[in-house]
Image 1: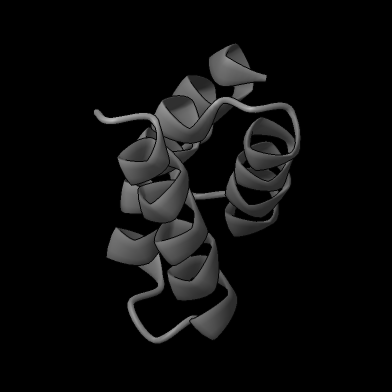
Image 2: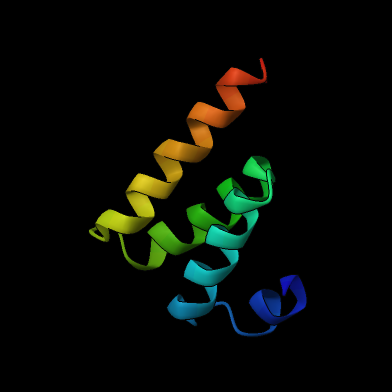
Length: 64
C-alpha cells in the first residue's frame, strides 16, 4: 500500500484506507505520516482530523 501512496499521492480514498488500516493494526506512527499527507490535500476533512487525533493519542500513550 505504501508503494501505491508514493506512486499516486493525490488519491484521497487511498490515503483514507491506508490510514485506517494502520490505526486498526497498531501502526500509529505510520498512520500519522499518511494523515499528514491527507490533511495537506484536504485540510477541512473532519475524518482525517479525527484519525490524526486518534493517532496522536496512541503515540502519547506509548510515551513517544
